[in-house]
Length: 148
Image (tube, rainbow, N blue to C red; front, side):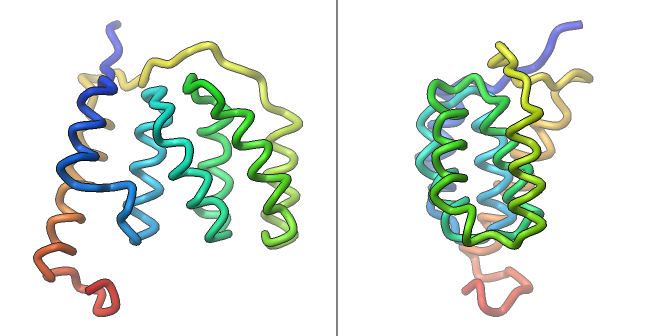
């Protein structure tokens, strides 16, 4: 079975067009960082580190640290460990414990492929959601009043 991938050039074009690294909506920013890390895009690491340093919800924190540890992006795992050491006291004790446990049980994976079987539906749905959400916010049609 052939796995679908998003090329770095495609992700960089999306960044240029939609400026997703600077979106303040945590849901969008989390999904964007995850998508780029799965594709092995090293240029997303500073954005992911900044995101992990400015919010501490376990909903975003733990999965993003896991993605950084799994990512084939050069320096992602090191950046994840350094970011956690720098910010662990700012996280809720349960979040801190769970992320620390993830670091202990991490087994490196030597794969930079965005493994999306079934025709890449995951990538299509994430990209579609990101485009839809950014356009709604930019056109001020977002149902959340404080986003505008």
